[in-house]
Length: 234
Image (cartoon, one colour):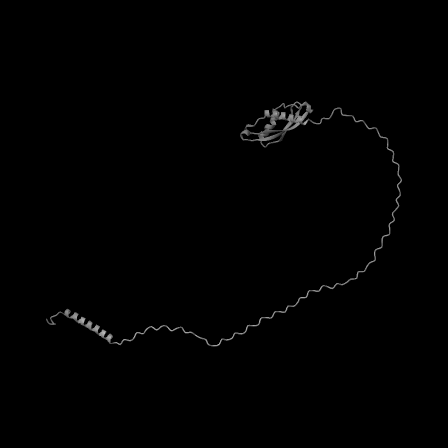
């Protein structure tokens, strides 16, 4: 088979291979013919430079001398003022008082005592016909007051409204009795603060008549008393 009879694609691939092989061989030959230079090793860094100053040092100025201490001026103490001797003139002693002459005392002449006048006859003091009453005996008075309080307690009434409201207190009643135990006068001496209880205390004295009679041994026609009227729910 001739080259004209081969197709165009069959001749293209061998030609390309031949050109590539020739190029590679040319490069290899160039490298082989080039002289080899020795590899330069990395040199170590130079040591740091040391600067030596060989000039002589400049001498320092000498230190100043220390200051001299100040002279101490002695302080003299103040001199005391000079003592001036004053001449004291001596005065002559005062003259002594002349002795006083005591006056002569004359002896008093005793005078005769006056004679006492004759005493007048003293008037006779008549004795009272009856001894004055000295007040009721304390024991009799206490016993009579006890009977009065017991008698009033039997007639005392507790107001219903005050009982329901739990009102309590003590009212004081002043009254005057005759000998038979009748009430001559009466009034509220001091209230307890509850009007119903105060009113009951004054009405009690009238409602409880006749009160116990005054004992004969007390010797009183009338008697004035202040009695407490107690209202308690205990």
